[in-house]
Image (cartoon, rainbow, N blue to C red):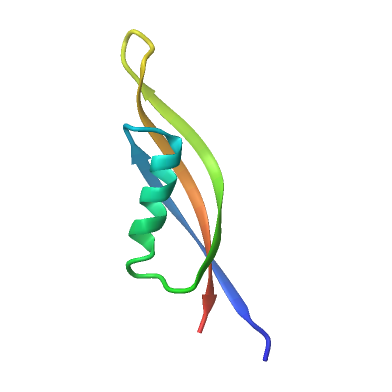
Length: 68
């Protein structure tokens, strides 16, 4: 039997860093989506203070999972 995968797009953010934003987003999605196979970082954005310090990392992810 052939397998079928589906792709959804999510947004996640973290004040700690890029990796934390990605891990947090995937962890949240995994609560309702089963059989996650992988993810692509589609877009990266940062929020800054007026002085130019990064205050928040934001990512858009395309998450792939198998359809049962």
